[in-house]
Image (spheres, rainbow, N blue to C red):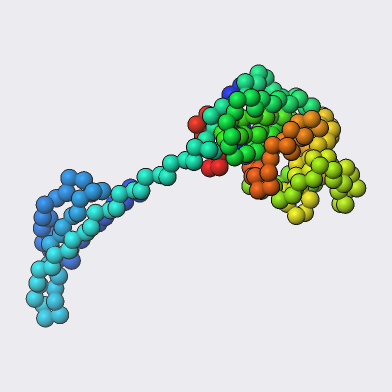
Length: 225
């Protein structure tokens, strides 16, 4: 997930050269600003018969850079939960009181080993999570939720996965599990049971989970950039 810039620690210019082949070059009206004004160069070029007719070459100004599109306000971070110190394994936080309705985005930071839940840009939940091992790592990328089941048993690992939310077709999910030091998953994002229940009740199929490694963002940043 993008990390959060607070005290939570677990978390060219173009140059245009114009040259004449003849020995004489006359610069007409030198521009004051190459980026916005045209430059005109009058030069002599020998013809096939050895006569040097004059030729005028005009260079169009470089187009102005298009302004960046404004960020979608629904995905701009407006609040970060006031959590002091690192989030310990098994610890979670939730506060959606008075938060206006908005799209749900979840972020997972593999370095911080923390998941955050945002609603309309307001962080409403955060928890330490269990992640994959070196042999079966949790993948990086953007993953929409494709399926949800309150009660699910993995046919790959013969294990119960309460409040399962599928991210990939090869078995990567969000689900409840024991989140403790020394445990790893098979690539899934494991959450404490009560926190996983709240996340499950908040999300919808199609909501996206952004999994990153060490990406730092803060207030005013876009969750989707």
